[in-house]
Image 1 (spheres, rainbow, N blue to C red):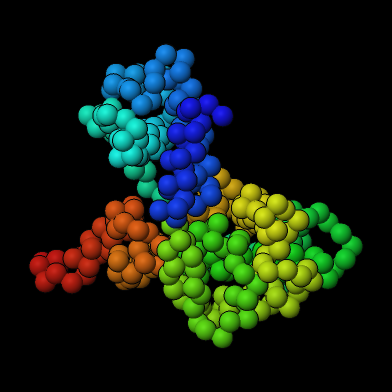
Image 2: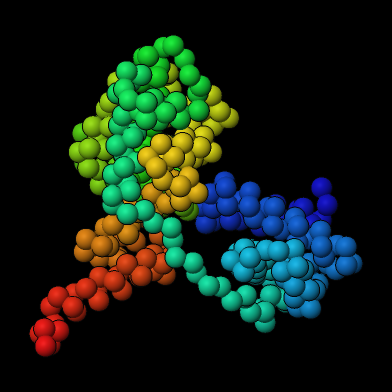
Length: 323
């Protein structure tokens, strides 16, 4: 193991132990730092005795490679944390990232489905959950589970019920897809009207459950033949459904519902959950808690929804608007 690899390992160990960084975050940081240290090595630079110029050159190279401003900003954030760690641990005498400003980021508005579009998506998923003896559109939806067509009507219904449960839960709770697919089997039999979810950084939060979502979980559990600890078991390395499989199935249901597949993803349904709550008067802080955002600034990507609501309130309530 090279000296650079050891530095990366020590930094990631700190993130995991002290900040509870998730496995996906650690894997992404490992890739980013390996790329960064490889670039420094090609230029003959030592990361523990570095000035700002090579770091600026690396960021400029990222732009020529076609990385977006958002991706470059995330890469710089990772590198900053790494150099701060080296400085705090006494491994470096200076932090070369301190004088460097990040690339300007224009935060894109999240893709959002309307309430009517979500209703269409759910209608097709419900058709797929009723079994093979449905309409042609329903048959398309039930074949969207990625398991292939079989002559087993019971298995087809189980796949359709699972997919409906996933969609109902995601839209009802706004869970991250990683949180959704890793729900324990016990979640379907809880008598509580909420779930306790462990999100990023190991932070726990309460997520209220609608009666429709609870019913969808019970139906799915009744059709679930596989044993194990997961609500959505699968033949995968983790033992549960993968996010890629769910995303693929969701896009097929979207196509059957007459929606463009590139407009629909698990994350888009999470956005729909938040946006529709705000449209109906929910407080931004409450939505922040439900989504599991550590910082309110992350939730503020939805302020365009609040802007429209405020304009509507002024139009409807201000006494001078009638004049």
